[in-house]
Structure formats: C-alpha cells, structure tokens
Figure 1 (cartoon, one colour):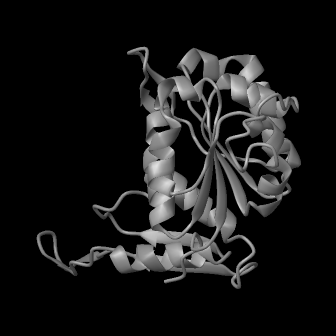
Figure 2 (figure 1 turned 30 degrees about the horizontal axis):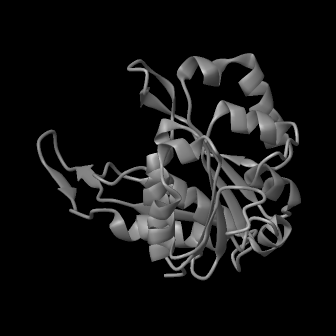
Length: 246
C-alpha cells in the first residue's frame, strides 16, 4: 500500500493547549511512518511539555525561539518553511488561530506559516465557549478561505470538566487527514471511486438470512489507499466494528 507519509518533511507546530501532550503521539506516529518531523514549540507549549520529549521521538532538532543560536533551524525559518511538504499545527489554541488569521509572526511558528507555500492543516483545541466565540469562528473562516485545512475539533469532555466542542481530533483521524492532504496530487487525482465493504445479509424468510462474515477491513484499506493517492472516494459500508475513516 502506498505510504503518503514516507520521506515527507513535516513541520509540526505545537501551541499552548493542555492537549499538546497528544502531539507527542502524533510526532511519534509520523516518524514511524517514515516522515521527517521538525517540531516548533511556542513559548506557551514549552510550559506544558519539554522540547527534549519531541527531540527524543523524532531524532530531529526542536525550535522554541525565533533567535535561538543553539538551534540550527530557528534563525532560518524561511528555509524550514520552503522545505516542508506540509505544516501541521496541533493542537492549535484560539490565540494561535487568531495570530495565523491576522498574519502575526512574532514567533517561529507564525513566521514559518507566513513563509510557507505548502499545505497547512490546523487542529483546534480549546474550551467550548472559546471555540464558539464569534471572534474564533471568524478567524477559522479566514483560514478556510485561504485554503487551510481545519481538522476538528471534536465533542467530548474538556479540560474544564465540561462537555462540549473543543477536543483535539483523535490522532488516527488526524493522521488520515494529513495523508489525504499530502496525497491530493497523487496519480489518482480526478478519479471517482466507489468502494463497498463489510458483510451483507439477505432475508430468505422472516427468520433466516443468507450472509457473510466479512469484517470490512479490505474495503476500508482499499478506500484509504485510493484516497491517499488523490482519488475522490465514496465508501459504501455494511455495519462493521471498524472506526469511521477520517
């Protein structure tokens, strides 16, 4: 199966949300998939999590300051932006989204985003009321209008203890979104593919059915592979135990 992440240069921007610990899992899985992950931590993210943790998982330098002479990447953020195949901001706080929407580049992440021409994926994570605030929604709309991909957020229990919309999208779903964005220019671009998956049952009388025990895994894998090569995929599935594809 084609791996759209293999040998891709990914800039991972991590901002100051409590969800930033999940970015460690994202960085690890991207690296395991063969990607070269360059991490940028904002000053707020640096309060939650250590650069050493990302450096240990990605085996690459971590940027924390725009003018950090100790980092080979921080000063030349333009080169970092130009080499990136994709920029992923996860988690993205309301503050970082506001900065991106208004072109503020007072830190290495903002400067890299302004300098890159590569696709950008932003995964919001914040309190539910902050997410629903008209200012945040307006900023997200600005990003969407510029072609930036927004991943999530999801509903669930938030750091405040309340339930609402604002949770960082689950990492497997985010990996799927990143793969989809990277594969948009693949060899199946412009193709429309319908995939059927899962076991079906046909009633032969009010009690009995004829069916099969297909798990749906093959169909889901085919749909994912086609999507990762740029196809527009419609997945028709019977009830399965598999998670919904990203």
